[in-house]
Length: 526
Image: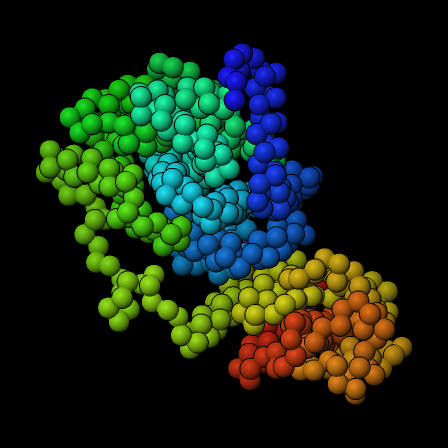
């Protein structure tokens, strides 16, 4: 690609458009980027955040089983020390961390999961590991200067190398040429401009903007001016300096010889002395802390420490520094967790273990709900927690919460989770007492009904036309919410194959969750 005149903003814009078009025509990036945009648009398009907004984001995250698990594992890890082990639902994570932090973290984890499965495995994994270490360093830096947005610094720094990862993934030949230039001593961004006509940072910034990432992420990708960096004048400059500092340290890990390590650390300390003042011993301690925390996240983001050239370089630098100062590096002496002599990540999960995990989702979810109900909460927030506990803990295809309308003549869908739930919610307009369909039967009997085979003739006769025509799940359940003989609402859930929806113990948990929902409604309508 011709690199002439690329400093002209108009030419840079044209280069970005060309590269974006090429990425859109390769593989699954369009559908993936649509998902990213869907997540990022949820906040920017809303004037006020409420339970419906958080519920919308929860629905998007819960579409992806792997993303849900990774998000909850990160939130419960050492990164969020005050929350470690306490969060079992996405809904609770948003209540505790805030909508914005969960949105940023989810979108970032999606990117890493997407790139994880591409062909350029070695280069991508190294770039992803470096990005991950970037994040940990930035988080530690934020804590060292008592900056209250450490979790956001983690996300921003992880995405600092987005342009590089996209080039590795979607332009492997061009990236190989960039690496050749770098082997000749050329700076990475200079090499990128020569080959692509644009720096990797500029590409990452442009893609982030097209994916509707918040300004604080986009601006954090900017490179500060050369020389000593002046004190920040805004939150966004503080974030940019943190991510740039982390990037410079990671670059030093890769590019610095052992005999020049102390000199490089001194240069970095001097460059940031006005904005993030850290003497060299504190930088060394920060890298020690980073090395320790890598273990906490290695399984979550599939880091293989032994095969990573970057992590081996980091370990070598830390070992040399420790020998000089006679200080042990924390975190490197941990015994590896095993099951029956095998590393934890290699041990296959038995059906009994999987069943226990599902049970824990339900029991932990119930504990979370009852804990939230002791304080101040919104009806929608708790209902989403209840729905999520059912959806994930019982492995349902779809769950929907319905509530009695103001006039009291029908039960209407309010919100749901699972396959096509947004469209399904609108279909639930159940007229009370006018028909003897399955919903009114459950309401009149005041108990839950579980249908294992919705195609059975005696069941089909009692299904309302709108349900047969537009929902028609092979198996479903209806649990009405009854208070003093009056139906205030109901839970509906289904699966994509016929057969028992719940075990006996799960039926007990389902009834308990229904009773919690009744209690929530009663407390909110006193």
